[in-house]
Every structure is written in structure tokens, then in C-alpha cells.
Length: 326
Image: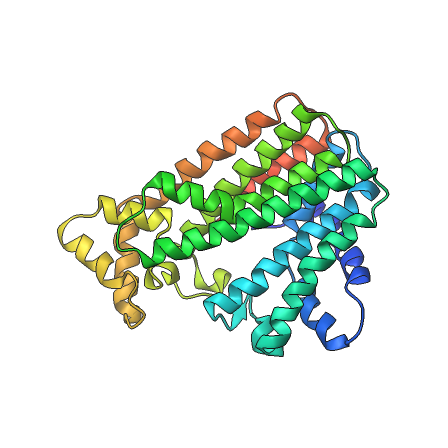
């Protein structure tokens, strides 16, 4: 996703705060914990925390601990995802377990998880607000774990999941952290339940739109951008929305070409490319983007009562998410 100037500036501020919190001994442990953070990242979730706080009149300084905590949790999930998927590279850099070894990678993930809650307790917010932040973040972490297992089960089972089951899975696996980012930002500014609920709804629907688009990129994305082979998700047998749609809509020879590639780690590059071309010919991209746009509109509606620059900056995220190029 292309960065806006606001996202870039926010990332610099968050990075400074993150680096100040991820220091300690043994140094190797903190090097591993900060590895993915130092090597890039848009800091999209912290951006959402801060803008959700500002949209309700809160100060950036009040939201910074929560913003850093969410990014630590996000990176914790990435470390463990890479271990589970046995991935060796992430965005062009070695994964934590590849660079530092499995034991240190697991400990680095644990440090990120624990530090997230420690950072929240160091904020200057009231005890009530701090407790609410911890409670919301803990629930989001449980949702992410549940969503991850739902994803694994979907891949293992022979039956094809429904679109509703897919949405439930990504709502937990991905959207939960978007949801909690906006909710925590709101809590840093107010105790008004309606405002917190509105921002939460925005984040959840943005997260669903984000993952739907991400899954489209996972099938048809340019390998120069994704750093993964074209059709990677198809070869890995991921039951994402674009692939489910393609299997459902295809017929005869086209269906055979797609199914030959689906979950086939030994598929040739030529046959995989042929399957991706078939999926393109079915108009899958247009259908998937329509679905992403549906959730983007729900997200925008959740912010209808607000105004100002912070609202505009949050709404701008929707365009970037839905219109991301392949």
C-alpha cells in the first residue's frame, strides 16, 4: 500500500517511541524483537490509533503508548506467522527465525507480546482508561489466535468454505487488530461508548476490506511488489475469497486448470501462470474489489458524524486499501 505523507510522518514518530521501548539485555533478544520493526513497515495500525484519538479531540501524546503497543502485537503475530508458515523472507528481509534461530524468534515474539502491555501501563491515562485498553487489546489477541486456527482448519478441510465463513475468519485474523487500533485510539480521547463503537466499526470494516484486497494481491499480485511468485496463494492452496470465487465460477477446462494449480507445490511456473490467466479472464478482480468496496463504504458510514482533518486522513486510508494496485 502506497504511503501518504501523513502516514510516513506518523511512522517516524512511532518508530522513535518503539525503539526507545525495545532496549535491554541480552541484546540479541531485543535485536530479534526489533528486527521486523527496524526493517520497514507502514505503521498503519499505530496511525489508526493516533488518528482515532485525534478525531475525538485527543492528544497524540496520550495515544502514543497504545499506538506502540498495537504495533508490537502486530509484529508478534508476524514473527509467529512466519514460524508457522516456515517462511524464510518477509518483504525482502530474512524472517526472525531464519536470521536468529527458532528459540530466539519464539522468545522475541514473547517479548513483543509482553512489552505491549507493559507500555500501556506506562501511559498517563486514568486507571479506568488503561484497564479498558488492556482488556480490548487482550480480546483482540484472542480473536487473532482464533482466526489463525480457523484459517488453518479451512486449509486442511476438503470442503469449500462459504463466503460467510471466510469473512468470519478474516474478521478475527486480520480485522481484529484494525478494530482494536481504532477503539484504543478512541479510548485515549473519550469514555463515550458511542464514539468508541463508531471508531471500532470503522477499523473492523477497513480491516475486512484490507484483507479481501490483500488476498486478491496474493493471487494476481506483481511479484516485484509482493516479493512472492505470481499466484503464490493459489499454489499454497489458500481458500481466500478470490480463489473461492474462481473455483465456483469456472467450468470445464478452466476449472481443471485452476484445480491443477490449487495446493500443488510442484506446479510448474508455466502452469501456475496459466491458472492465474484463467482467473483473470473470469473477472475475479472486479468482483473481489466490489466486495472490498462494500466494507469500505460501511467503514466510511461509521465516521459520518465526524469532521476535520483527522477524519479525512482516516477516510483516505479506504481509497488506498481498496484501490491498491496488483
